[in-house]
Each structure stands twice: as C-alpha cells, then as structure tokens.
Amino acid sequence: MLTTILISVVIVAVAVLLLGVKVFFVKGGKFPGLHISGNKEMQKKGITCAVSTDARDRARKTLDDVVKQNQIK
Image (cartoon, rainbow, N blue to C red; front, top):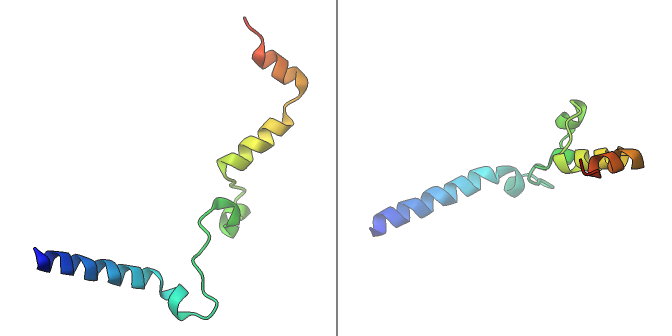
C-alpha cells in the first residue's frame, strides 16, 4: 500500500515537472494561454470564443428583431 502511494506521488511529481519545463527552466517562461481570445493561431482562422460571439451577435440585433422574437403567437 505504501509503495503504491509512493510510486503515485513520484509519477505525479515527474508529470508536473515535465509539464512545467518551460516555466521552471526558461527565463521569462510562462504557461501558454489556453483561452481562445489569446491564441494567435485561432485568431488567424477567425475563431472566437462563444462568449465573445454571443455578445457580438446580441449587439447586432435591432429593436425590431427583439420585438419579433418576443411576440406571443
């Protein structure tokens, strides 16, 4: 039981170390941005996050569109 826990802790420690090589060993290193708005490749392809897309689409609606959408049939 103790050996299993020890092996698990060592594996997790090695994984964290390998994932953080750039952060730990490169001067000024940092984890890459995971949000779509901060990813240059996604921006080049015109892909945006759902929250930004929704906000943009809501801003485009006219008063007439909102009235038509809310009318009771």
